[in-house]
Amino acid sequence: QVQLVESGGGVVQPGRSLRLSCAASGFTFSSYPMHWVRQAPGKGLEWAAFISYDGINKYYADSVKGRFTISRDNSKNTLYLQMNSLKTEDTAVYYCARVGSSGWYADSWGQGTLVTVSS
Amino acid sequence: SYALTQPPSVSVAPGQTARITCGENNIGSKSVHWYQQKPGQAPVLVVYDDSDRPSGIPERFSGSNSGNTATLTISRVEAGDEADYYCQVYNSSGDRVVFGGGTKLTVL
Image 1: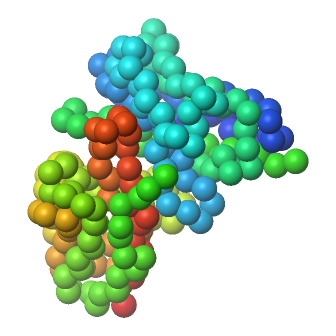
Image 2: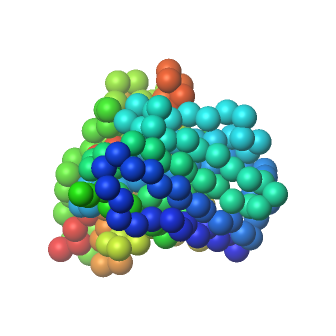
């Protein structure tokens, strides 16, 4: 079955960097686009970034554009999110999610990793 | 950033029908997807492409989309359906994904 396991979360000071990873298994990772979606404590879902199956096309929410970089290593079945210049408002649970075969929806989600930006 | 318009909360008695709406100008021209999220858990896709159900999702969950409103309908509501529900679309002008603000479904 599809399994997505995020890692790399933790507490970081404002202005610092953090890299999240998402290890995929149970499906042909290289065939699927992927999302990162985040959820601030007590708030709703917010899409952060998308990457095509081959890593060529990348799209970002305005709130993270220029600071976050999504990437993937299909040889390692791993998705990444490099987060730079972190702000307190980036505090959230970050989920990686597989994009569905017929559209931009997320048909499988990881359990998430918590990022806390605080001084 | 903007979000699709959802009612903050909907309440329904067990066995009744819950309807959760998602609004945007001309949303009927887009594909709408719905997620269920229970406390402390990751979201789960319950309806995609307006009205399709992933495998394993009960037939009690259905969706429709027309004009300015998309609707998630949950028939014969059970206590286990109590959760937050989010709608989502793809906005081609800007290549971005947009979620609704979420609706908390309470089973009375």
